[in-house]
Length: 49
Picture (cartoon, rainbow, N blue to C red):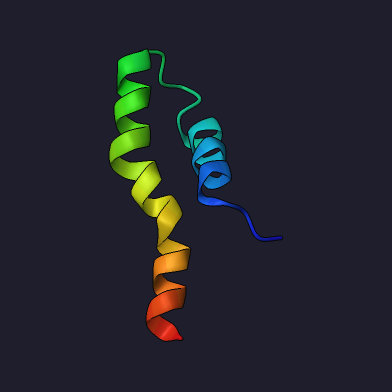
């Protein structure tokens, strides 16, 4: 099943950020780490094809 980047970000926040209580910390983690990671499969696919 192919997920859109937004869905991947949401899932990563649910799985990896569940124990982070500080909303600012969660937002920073989402923006700085999860959003770029969620775009990685498409970027790699473009490079390989």
